[in-house]
Length: 97
Image 1 (cartoon, rainbow, N blue to C red):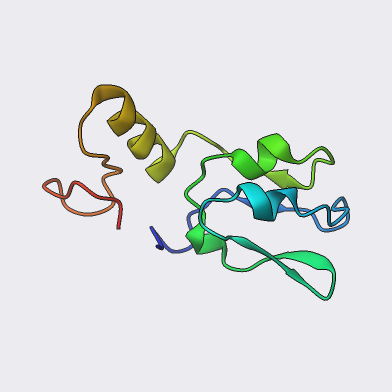
Image 2 (image 1 turned 60 degrees about the horizontal axis):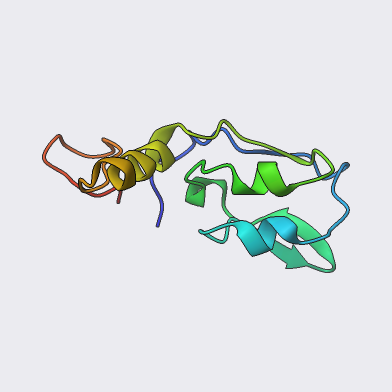
């Protein structure tokens, strides 16, 4: 599911990447992939900015402003028991798609 085009704060630094694939394993939206034994960003627009990749990267190859955008809406929905909302659409929209 894509949220908004060209707004993700995700930054990938391939020169720091050791291709350990932890980012691939923890990313809930398959932003990363392994191609020719190298980790790559498949589609930055798939990122919901949850921060799982950056938190789990021991090598500093990934940076993201976690807790913003749609990830924050999903987390707030879970905490409050309301439908998740990231205000991606109109004000009546309860989902982030």
